[in-house]
Figure 1: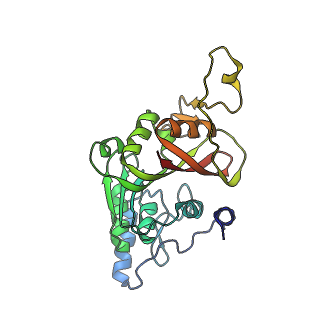
Figure 2: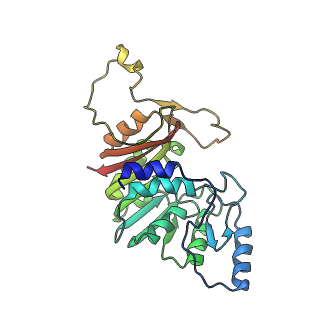
Figure 3: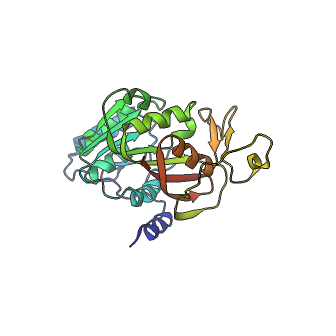
Length: 273
């Protein structure tokens, strides 16, 4: 089955949570109760994931029991093989995507989060301990990570872009630590939905301040958010899909493939140039 059909199938998945993480099969009643107690103590959880059979971290909270299961169904077909690779998960939150990368055979996985979500790194470390997974989690920003010598074959950058005050600086920092491929998800201005397609290769174009090109529908734009966005005060802008691709190109990436699972988001797979 090709990638296009895999993504289409992922978009049709039921939204009810299923066994999305491989969990240890032998847990005593005391161990299960200890996990339940810690899950309660570390609330709120952003990721709803199973730390044991029938034991979930966020079955009733926001954004809902189907997250991140439904998003993983979209992300996984775009990953390709991660066997033996080093992976960085930027904005890892409770750690679900990092844990899945390790489960798929990644040699090394590092998840980082800047601490905006309360207990995020503590939650991620606890989940890794429950699942007996060797994944490293740190409270850090990618700008600081780029000051070192670390490099990763694959970088996940999901649900972070529009929270940035300085998006181009962060994309440049990501390029410094990305050895090969970046998989990025962001909200966007409204667009048509589609399953999978190649990113357009647009030539560098000159613009004129007084020419109509600035108002063309496909001209890259950012809508600045003053105040809150759907009640979220941490969002700074909403990019058009064209702006996402243009900003990636301007920071040394070559966008290759993209999907539009809803009318207000996109995922892009890009190579480091």
